[in-house]
Length: 445
Image (cartoon, rainbow, N blue to C red):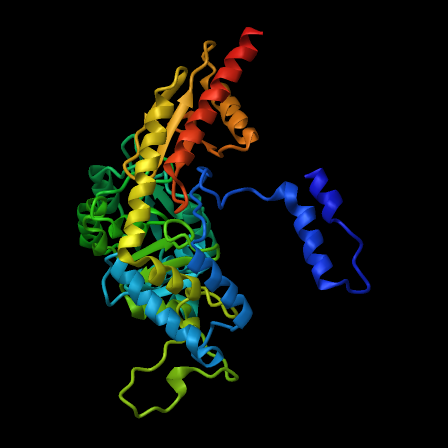
């Protein structure tokens, strides 16, 4: 951090500099602070790379510099978003009538979908939240597994619901909602309710039982939201599609583009079964704007779609452009191939690292997420796990992250990069083996 600050911190310039010099120095000065997260041996968090077509389309997006808020601001990008949104619903096997929004990532996708949920479940109780706000509204509760991603908590805070609206159910060891506990929770209080399910728990990759959970929730008038930041992509793979059985019964879904679709960052998607609630929660009007709904058009052509009606932003980049390019370049089969190769790589990483002397396999990947830890003679397995992860990160050969799961520190294995190869997996396993040997040698010394 000190090195980066010394290199980048300068007095505010009074006069400009040569463009090429600025860029050359920016590349030089940031060298020590660029994480190789776009590479094939980055297995921390859940971060993909950028396919060539997606990367080039992202450059085009910046070059065109359109404000993708209204059809009038950029007709081409508005139509690209229409097409890409429809393609995504087909790929993810979601209801064709669902509305959609392109957001910065799953965080804002949750805000968008849960805003629609808030609108609908409160309207069902006679409360117009868009006009009256939350003060005095019926108390809304959000049922979760208790292992939900932190972005769900932040979304309910941003929506004015407060973290206290979150009510956990019982779960199994992998974070899947227990249906008996869910049924009890639904029945214990007559209140506007949203149920959050997971398609790919962040540590274990586990999937909830969507068919039965959706049935129970809908029997009690609840809205069902699915966090599928990476797991929703399993729908594209015939091998893994069964994990999502019944997910199409939900009311809203979110996922990321920068994970398994491998487009550059600033790419998340929200889908809502109830377009009216979605539009009511997000749309806005201003006299100086040109809204397609306000333009007289007697033709048989469906009216153009204004993006501002479906997401919580005003000015925004055309983030559908790299999505469109990635889907065209890969096709359904190409995306399925990435998902299945990454899942195979994750399985091999977990099994072979877990088999090393001093390692323990905690979670075998069902798709692309696994967990291992490293055992210490003195019983401080958490500390040794942290030390081994640190050795691997410092080696520059591979990058894994740490997490806490069932009160244990563990090394997370996450593979979503289209570039990851069998050789990358071999090198990563060798690096972990070396780190274990170095620790053992240091202990003997």
